[in-house]
Amino acid sequence: MSDTPPNESIPVRCPYCGFRLEKQMSYLKEHATFPCPKCKGLLNSHSEEIAKAIAAVMQQRDKVRKLLGFGHRKSDT
Image 1 (cartoon, rainbow, N blue to C red):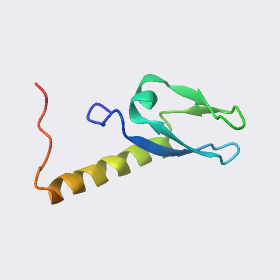
Image 2 (image 1 turned 180 degrees about the vertical axis):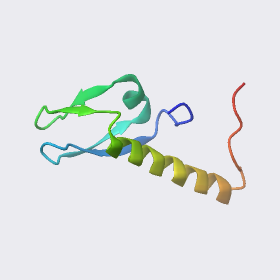
Image 3 (image 1 turned 60 degrees about the vertical axis):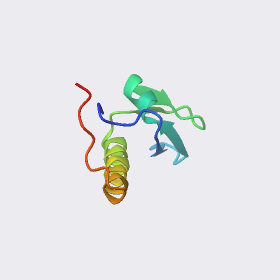
Image 4 (image 1 turned 90 degrees about the vertical axis):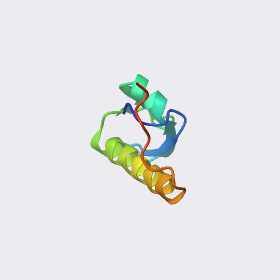
């Protein structure tokens, strides 16, 4: 998640109760697990579902950047 915009939120669904919420990518990077606000079930921020959601957000961001003529972001080195 090193190239993920920290303030972008992604949708997350609790696997226990189905509650839908959004979490910022920076939060998911810093917390391996977090509780569902509805059922208090423990969600894994490194789950396959969240990884897919992050990939989808990144793909959409890249499409928008390309449409706007920005191309790919260069490394901050």
